[in-house]
Amino acid sequence: QQCSTAACIDSPMLSRLVSRFASAPGRTFAIGVSAGNHRTPGYVPATGSTLPGDITLQRARTWDQGVADKFQSSTLTEIFKGKRVALFAIPGPFTGTCDKAHVPSFSVNSAAFKAQGVDTIVCVSRLDPYAMQGWVTSLGDKAKGIDFYSDDTAKLTEYMHAEVDLSAAALCGVRSNRYALVAKDMRIEVIHREEKPSNLEVSDGKSILMAL
Image (tube, rainbow, N blue to C red; front, side):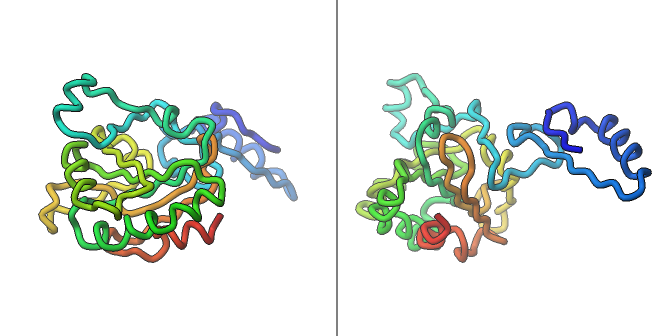
């Protein structure tokens, strides 16, 4: 039996289903969890999941620019809807792997991503957009072809289950672990997560290109 509605992930109903079908000899069943149920306990986004459109990010910009646009945020719907987008998350700007390897791995391959039908490359980090803009300026040509955003509310980091406490590295507490994904019209096609934030083994630009 196949269940794909949001109601089927309700714990009491799930228990009743398990009891009913487990007692029937030779009978098997599968429960499909709707990809949009990101608020369900235990939910972890994966290939096929649909990004929640109401999560917001802040585009990297100066403080004065933020004041001028009244700190306007961008929803994931605005960033991803109707497009194919490659997004990679970094623990923090101005840090070794992020600065010297992760960002360049996407910028040098920006034309190759375009050839694969990727409309936009996004870099996101769990900090304010003003520090992010300072980093963009310092990156110079290494930032070309990439849009930079701040996960200022930490909602994207939480959705991705990517929270990691980096106090030991003087990074002011909880940041995002390193990962990368490609989503087409909000639906995740590829997602690679690093085991720890210092790694860059599966979420670099070349690895993501090879997975498309």
